[in-house]
Length: 130
Figure (cartoon, rainbow, N blue to C red):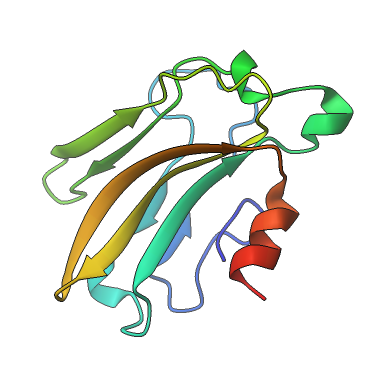
């Protein structure tokens, strides 16, 4: 489970490069690097979820976030493989399941998801870690 307080998976194949809480500046706000060749062979799926920290307390939701997207690119060639932009207005949702990498017939594939939840990080910890 990799997130802003645990920036690296135990096998080192997934690295989160830090949390940009303001969204200011050029380029991507946050980067998660995945080395698919080093992902533990027992792992069949990697889920990419974004939550708003303390959303209820701060009275924030994804309806207030503009230009949200996930993109997959080849780190070696810097070639963008795919990009999925959220187009729906998630005015009540405080978490978004953006997409997933999954293994099919031994090959990694990406699927855009775009499902919103009125939940926080703990919900996903309970769902996927325990």
